[in-house]
Image (cartoon, rainbow, N blue to C red; front, side, top):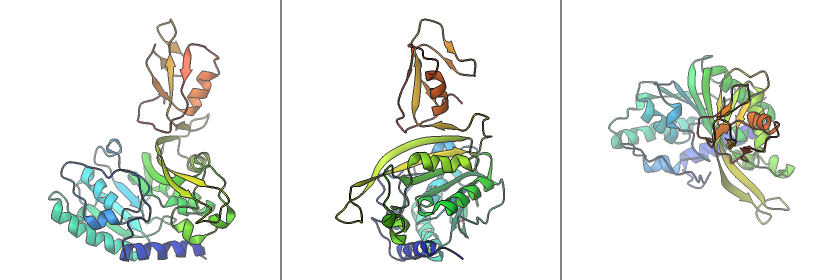
Length: 324
C-alpha cells in the first residue's frame, strides 16, 4: 500500500500544475541565459526546483537524457537545447496535470525558440520508484528537489532505479535541500512540509552515503547554497533550522576497492623543493600546481605528515579535474 505522504505530494503538485506557485521552491540559482534560448513566463513560474541539474559538460556527444519530476518543463527545455533530437530527452512524472502543463508550455516554447520542437521531449507517466525505462539505457539522469521528499526506504528505491537505468559511466545529477541540524520529528512527519521540500532534508554526509550505498563510485559536490530558514514563529521548532540546497553529480563508475571517491572541493598544493611529490598511488603533485582531490585522497596525503603539502578544507564546489 502506498504511503500517505506520497499522495499528499501528488496533491500539492497537482495544484501547482493547475495554479502556478512562483514561491513554491524559491530557487536561488540564476536561470540559464544561453544564446537562442527563451523560457516562457509560465515555465519560469513553474520552476519548482532548488538549484539546477543542467551542466554543459554532462551533455556532450548527444546523450540520452532522463528527467524525473517534470515541473513546468523548464529543465526539459534546457536539456533539449543541448540535445536537439527527436526523443532525446524523456520526462517522467506521476502527476497527470503536471505532464499536461508541460505539454502546453512546450507549445509556447516552440513560438519563441525556432530551434525547438515538442517532439524533442518524450513525456511519460510513471513514478520515480518504478521508472518505465529500460536498464542501462540512459546517459544522463536528473531530478530537482524531488528525492528529498522521499522517506528512507523510498529514497533508496528511487536511487536504485536511477542506477538501474543509467549506462556504465552514466551520470545522475541531483539538486536537493540538505540540513545539518536535527529535524524535529513533528516536522519530519508533516506530510505537506515534506512535499514542499523542507522537512525531508538530510545531512549532506547521509545524503551522499545513500547515493554511494546503491553503487555510485564517484560523487561530485558541485554547489552548495543557502536555501531556507524554518523559524519558531512559523514552524514547530525551538530553534532556527538552516536549510541549504546542494547540486550533486553521481557517476556510475565501478566502486573502488577502498570505497567511493567523493569530491567536496578539497585541493592539494605541493610546495616542496623536489620536482614533484608522487604518492605511488597514481597521484603526482607538481610544485605550486593546485590539484583537486577527493576526500579519500586528501586524507591519504595528509597521513604522510609532510609539512610541504597543503590540503584545503571542503568548499563544496567541485568543477572538474582532480585526482581520480
